[in-house]
Image 1 (cartoon, rainbow, N blue to C red):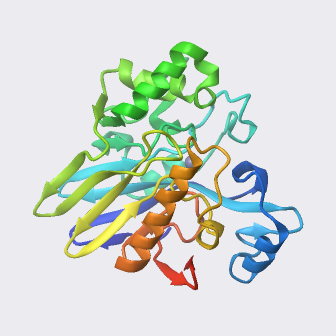
Image 2: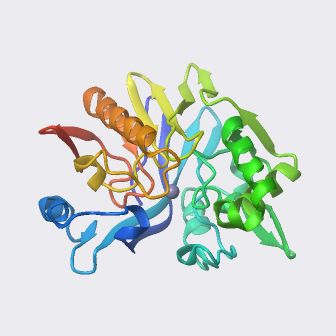
Length: 296
Ligand SMILES: [Zn+2]
């Protein structure tokens, strides 16, 4: 397990569901030209880029934030047993390490006070529910589940117009709506503060582009800052190619602007970057490299 990061009196732990998995380049990007792959092999191969198979190493990880008696889960990965015929990589996953890793962090599902997701894609809300007696029920029965109001309304409208299977591959219906129906959802603004006291501050920060209402989660305490980036960044090659759009971006121009500003902020201030899809460097610092960036 990655050692926790301390931000003043706050701590951040990585909660891994899938530590490393090769996915085809086309899972993330429409195109990744050979010269771009070749230029990055010295720092990314073969763990992050496997050039012969044209695959990219990815992870699925959540974060646990602990502050002043509050335990917060940020993003909940893919979940298990979800029916995803349009997302075969996620279909009916079994025996992931999510709950056992939660236990390794000394936590039970009942210990989570707040669940917050950076956006409503299927690999960020999966563990919001699990199957119990043939029904999808909230995995974290005591938690307040925060959803960005604009993001939720956008997906609900799509759900009403297009049907369950068309929205986040079915995840809105089986992983988000049951939480709402259980009365555990709260709808918040994109700059919502989760915590602001002597311990420090934890707040949402608007980071739009990958989805309409995508947010990061920022922690600040004792002069240190960390940002849980959600899908503002998917793969370390985007430090070399910040303008490379991700295939599923809602607005790729906006996503590129968000990513550039996030990377510049982390490089220039020393803020820690917590990017859940990046194996090994899931809590890392960013530095400038020529007119681009590097981490690790
Ligand atoms: Zn994602």
